[in-house]
Length: 251
Image 1 (cartoon, rainbow, N blue to C red):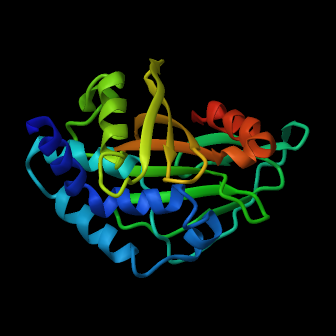
Image 2: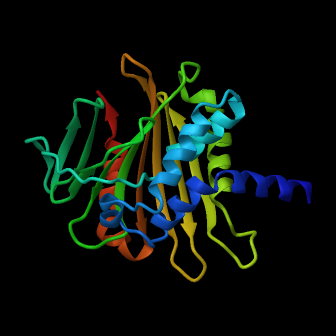
């Protein structure tokens, strides 16, 4: 019972972030809707994150980063961005961001969008032109000076367990979203996490995430790249999304 209560408190404490994330990832909000913005959600996220970032408690700051790293922001504007000219493979191109210092290989016909962040986080998203629940997004989160490497949040296995358990609602009555950790590993300073989310009565949603921390000369920033697709779209988008996720590099 004590363990269950502790789990409930962790979930309730992150509700403003993870509830919105689950809405997006279980298909209630596709990427095109996200990029147009949702004024009913956005202000709550921005205000909540600002208050937590100012907190002095290391535990709260770690919770914030667990939440912020995997949440898609509600954006008020959409901006198309030109792709790099060179094709790496047929139907793929390299997107290079000289401002945020990263590059990624994406399907050549996918759209790219950005939006105004809240001063703490910003989002860049890649998604098909046709209506779809599959996409790749990069959330860039400003960190405090004491967060210099991913181990600041704990080892990769513990980090992944905390992330997935914080998203899981399968213990609720009526049943909520079921989150399941598939795999986690650390390699060359990056964390790789694979997991699924499944809403009751719906197909599982597969998520692949890569995390890395880098200094842009002003502050440390956490990069969280997440690709996702549902079972029904695995044949069409699964391989493309996994290729995009595995291609992510800082420059």
